[in-house]
Image (cartoon, rainbow, N blue to C red):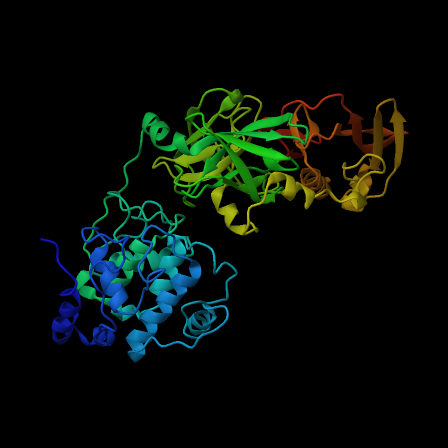
Length: 547
């Protein structure tokens, strides 16, 4: 028979004499009000969380969203998570959770959390749904460490989807070891990016308040998956991604990866940069609109959102080492979903504009923005480029996403309208091609216009060293202005601007020079995989190729 928590609160009282002195503050968790059976019409008496909702309500920790509605499946907001942590801390230390009213309502709890070390800095996302990672971080800081003594042995790195380098790792492992968190599946996954439901929050906070409710759990070492298992488990979260111009013409086709049930996703920057519309085609054939949070053109990665909820997604990991087995998932050539297998040859390749994961997993056009996963099926990178043969291939580490800005996703058209290339650093009448001299400070040696091509020349001796720094600056400016190298050493625009750019080493009137060749093109080919090519007499490897 299911234990009723009319006796749960009694259990706390009966155990007080048995608790060690470290738990002295738990005597302050007593019933503050009475919960009437059936009070919340959306919490059935046989629901797994019913006892927890009752206890959390009687402790004065969680109220309903109305007098008769608890909303167990609704997501908890960041502000509500902070309120819970502040109340736990206050009751444990003072026996009271009385807080003054404020505007906005959560400010009084935020101030308390900042004053008492629950938060280390103010946030800007209080009204947004709280991720499980955020929830764990604030809750773990609400009680002293001695009140969260370990009852489980969880080795570092044992939780499959929580890297020890993650900012929330210490909090999550503390709560697992204390028996407050038990994992979301048989493998013990935490799912840090997913949101926390109010029913789940009720269960967790009652375990915080009552040590007798804490759970023993063990996590076995994660087994490596086969390629077919990777396909079955991961491919539903990988989608085709089509980009369109203002006239509805297809500009490019790539791939993307969903990383939360609410549709948070990632793709390449060159698929989303400068476009008017993005559409995701899921593995089951359904199509969904896509919005944009932010694009990092230097790293060639975009944080996007596939419109919808309850979507399949991949867990992420920042752990990658040379020799690890990896799998690349995407839609090469715009065709069927495909998985290729390889190994990591360099987890921190620094030959390009940003640090990349180099592997032998083959990727070709259409794989842009696809998933690079480890042997447990966790997303470690986003495929962005390869050599012409498909290997080696290069992926942006998923950790780069943590540096991106943008808390609100907007339509591609709106994002593009507010992120137009800056005309002030472009060649006159050749917008939006960036002016090499304006970008790098190298003086113009001369220029020639021959039919549809304009040539700009810069003295090689005016470049610093072997020119690497100036070239990398210019590649970054090209990418910022929607120009990427898709093939044959030619930069074309992902936004459909009918211009191309080629960089050559040549002579101008007998002087060794770097030439920037800007040509008009009659049509914009559908772009795909950036090609990683050795340019400028093989003195540098330029990260300038788009998948």
